[in-house]
Image 1 (cartoon, rainbow, N blue to C red):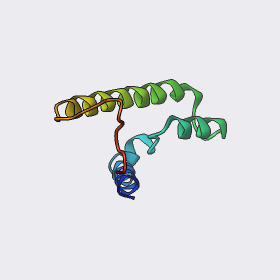
Image 2: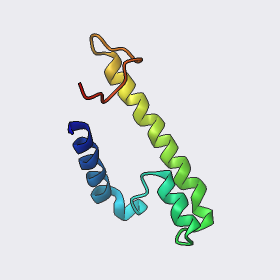
Image 3: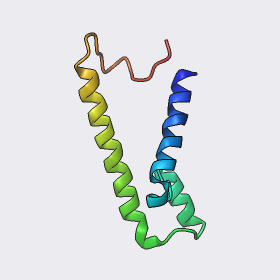
Length: 83
């Protein structure tokens, strides 16, 4: 439950903090879904998805750098494991 709560609070914080800037498109599936529904301009698809992918890669790199400095870190074990 701790991982789910942390994820939910993170998304909530991101929506409140950046929703007025990006429309809270933190998942490319939301962007594509809005575009398919005619609620998002075709010219904005690539910049949004590129920003989302670059943000995800940057976040993964930061997480790896932080975790790799910890004793007993094993990339094969996985992150955010409950127990």
